[in-house]
Length: 525
Image (cartoon, rainbow, N blue to C red; front, side, top):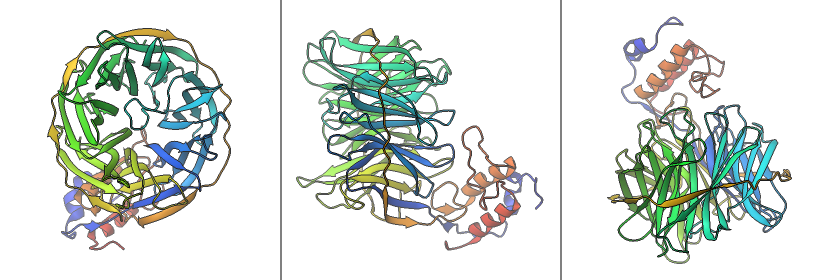
């Protein structure tokens, strides 16, 4: 075959005589990262160089906890880690985003002058601090009784930065939702407080969990927000809002079930731009729901017993299914807990669930965030464990096949989903402008992490979609990369090129020879 030939058209010829059975392959692991003091990861992203980045919390000296972010290569080796401290008390990082210029945006909380609030950090691609902005707001104790909704941060198409959180004990109510928008240099464009009123009485709470820019209409600057709203009776409902580029409400909707409470923990937008949010119904039951992004109207909702969500824990697959990270808790004290992944169809049917952890009482293992391994396959799960590692709670990084299989400590749990009818109403919400912003002093003391490996299976060349096989589906991906001629094959999104199997900066005949060897093989060596 000659270089430059359209490989897609050569599919039949290229595979002629190839083995009928595809080979098994892997690049999967379960690893812990930590020190003798607690560490935990709350969110995980792919970087454009196809590495991973987590954000979370480290507690080196009691209550003086720090924001903690770690960069890993594709095999889970630590490339660098940074902690950020205000020096006055509790700090934690909840969301992380890689901006278009390669810098990192961190959504955090911290204390400044005795006041707990929201901290937004921008760092270089290597983790050096560029700027930080603080506003009063988020407390670590959640109204929903299970963790904190944290702080969400997202870059908009305008390169502005949107962030949501909640603020406590202001405006004569319990908690209000806060939306802040910054310029890329950290200058505040506006702060808005959203205050529920009407038939909710004096016991009012409005918690914002997550913000994302609307996909439709594109580049409008409009944003979608999810969170929770508590009624005077104590019942809680999920909340969704759409706001314009100035923070004015386009629509706001509350969602409740006929009995009990509903909580929204995080969401993402599917290919059509509609909202898929995940959360909890009552205690120990998860909920996933789809909402029309233009009107807020529920399209479907499903519940499944025995699974608690993480933070911003929703991810979509190329097949348009929905993958959610979280925690499985069972039994009385001492409880058993396991990190896990659950996959739903685009219509809310539960497809599969896998658990990862020791499966023994007394160990605390949680799943918090998940990302599809870029650019082509598998999943990366950010979590925490005290079952193995350097001591106390450590970051738990699990990399799986797209089938959820890992090299060890994995268990598929039979599970079903039940349709749920959501009752929608329009709450009365007042919008107030805020101006309380400051620039804190942030330090970044160095320390070293210890990596402990529970299991690791070396990747076989050719499994480009991460499904554990080298087959025709991988050939289609390889053909696209071959026809692109040079790396990276997705330059608008990634600077890496997984189909460059010999790492020479091109996808050419030499790579095809390696791919063909993998395809023809019966076992992985």
